[in-house]
Image (cartoon, rainbow, N blue to C red; front, side, top):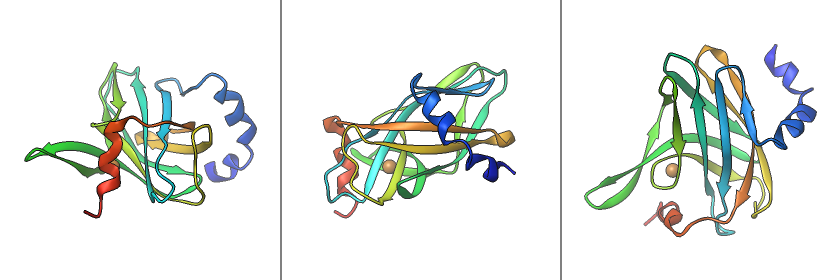
Length: 156
Ligand SMILES: [Cu+2]
């Protein structure tokens, strides 16, 4: 029934936006943003902090975003001096701790935007966790740092 409920919730999402914190009792997402990309780019990267206040490890198992065809969990790792991205099936948020998604590390890869998103634009995502928990997040597009450039070199 969750899908039906979601159709009624856009107003609640907007309310939560003013706090820029999205939480159930145990999981909290803060500072969620998307790095602005060049106009021709078919991918964008999203970053945030996910806090886990429970006493057990939790997993983020999937994410969907309006304005994008698909979203994946990725991790940038260094191999032979090159930054490469690995697809992650899930993200683990350790008990009583947090996972930081940030440039050069874990991030969310957003594929095929339906329109050009510029700094100041927003998009809504829903992250699903183990136990069926879902958090709605609003992400603002912001100017990127220089070190996001590896995302533009997929097709070398
Ligand atoms: Cu990536």
